[in-house]
Image 1 (cartoon, helix red, strand yellow):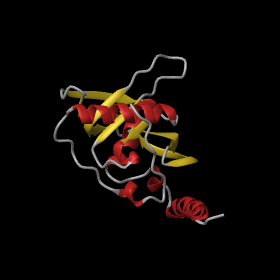
Image 2 (cartoon, rainbow, N blue to C red):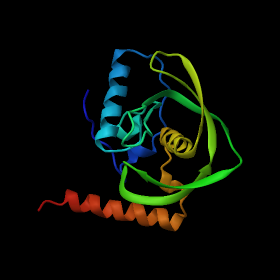
Image 3 (cartoon, rainbow, N blue to C red):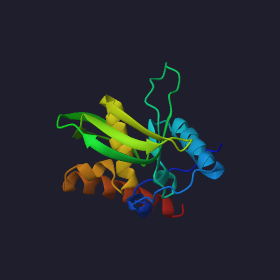
Length: 173
């Protein structure tokens, strides 16, 4: 297992729509393990493959509290098949937008189908923070960032701030 570099805005690859996984093999399982290790190291509760520059429909999630044993979920080709009409608001953050948080409204529950690490079809019905996390990560697979749910003004401010920081890093001292 290896910790991978997490892409941050304004990296254009974060807008890429990820491709479905065709084959589950040792290379893919190793990638999932790397994603999990990268997510735990960051630390975060979810990570999509595109966030480490791999445009594949892969997500790892672990919403276990700090004092609880890890409960990782590996979602291959996840697809939301139902969302509740009831909405809820959570303060979201993103490993690709470090140190920025915003209140985002999403359906409070969702149903997701996916393949597990063994290639078996699975379905989960999620609510609370897991529902928010699943929707957030599947957005990544579709080239959508959580700031895309904000007003244009707020989103543009965030992007401008990160673009400026990126320029400062690029200028030699």
